[in-house]
Amino acid sequence: MIQWLFFLLPIAALSGWLLAKKHYKYNPRLQTSNVSPDYFQGLNYLLNEQPDKAIEVFVRLLEVNSETVETHLALANLFRRRGEIDRAIRIHQNLIARPNLPAAKRTQALVELGLDYMNAGVLDRAEQLFLDLISKPSPPTEAFKQLLRIYQQEKTWQKAIEMAEKVQSQSRDNMGSLIAQFYCELAEQQLKSSNNNVASLLKLAHSHDHDCVRATLLEAKLYMQASNFRKASKTLLAIEQQDHRYLQEALPLLLDCYQQMNNLNVFEQWLHDLLVEYPNMTSARLMLTHVIQLQQGSQAAQDYLYPQLREHPSVEGLHRLISLGEQSNPMLVPLIKGITDTLVRRGNRYTCQSCGFAGKSMHWQCPGCKQWGSVKPTEIHLSFLESLLDSSK
Image (cartoon, rainbow, N blue to C red; front, side):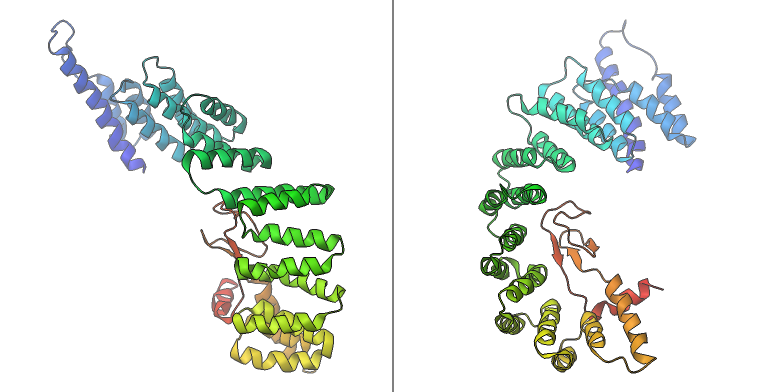
C-alpha cells in the first residue's frame, strides 16, 4: 500500500502545480517561471529512501481545493492504515477547517476523523463526533454503524440496541439476530443480580430472532432455577429445530433435567433417535454412553461404545472408551490415555463460520471478526489427529 503513496504524492503535487500554471498563464504578472523547489526536494527525499520527509513536503505542497480533497482523504486513510493516526487526524482536521469545503466532503471528512479517533482508542471523542453527525439533517449511515461499534466495545447494550434499530431503519440491513444477542447480554447481566426482568428480555430477543439459540438456553436455565424441569427440557429440545449444531450446549442441561424428573429412559431413547438423524454427532454419542453407564454400569457402556467407534471413530470417543475400561495393562492403556488426554485438551471445540477462529470455549461474539452468533460447536474427529500431533511437535 505504501508504494501507492509514493506514486500518489508527487503526482498529486505536480498536478496541483499544473493547475496553477494553467490558471496563471493568462496573467503574465502572476505567472511563475519554475516548478516549486519544494517539489524537487520531495523527489530527492524519495530517491534517497526518506519517505517520511517526502510525505511532509508533498502534503505541504498540496493545496486544498475541490480537485484535491479526494487526494487528501486518500492520504489520510493511508496514514491511518500505517498506524500513523496523528498524521491522519491532522489532515482531516485541516480539511474540516476549510470554509469553502463542500458539505458532502465535510461530512465525509468528519466520518473519517471519527474513525481516526476510534483507531487511536479515544472512544469518547469519536462517540461525540458521530452523535453530532446523526443529529444533523440527512445523517450518514456510517455514523450510526460506528456508534454501534462503540457501544458494543463499551458493552452499553441498551444503547447498542437503539443504534442497531436506527442502522436497520437507515440501511434496511437485517439487524434482528444482532439485536437478539444484545438482549441476551442484558438478560445475563440480570441473571447475575436478580431474575426480575430476564423473561421479558428473552422474549424481546426471540421477537427479533426466533432462532436465537442463546436466548433459548437462557430461558431453559431460568426454568431450571425455578425447578420447572419439564418446561426447561421442552425448551431445550426446541434447539434441534433452531440449529442442531448447538445441541452440544444443551445436552448437559437436558441430562440434569431428566435426572431431576427421574426419567432417564426417555432421555436415552431421545438420544438414540437423535443419532439416527445425526450419526456424526459425537457429543450425543458420548452423552448416550454416559446415560447407559448411569443406568446399566460401565461394562454396558463399553459394549455400546466400542462398535459405535468402529463405525464412527472420534478422538473423544476413544478417550471415553479408555476411561471406561479397567486399566489392567500397566503400560499400554495409560500411554494411550495420555495421548488422548493431550488431544482432547488441545482440540478446538468451537469454530467461527465467518473467519475461522477456533477456540476451546463458547463465544457468542467471535473474538476474531466480532460477528455475533457465528461461532459454532465442532466435534473433535480423528481427521484432526494428524494436524494436532504436528502442532504439538
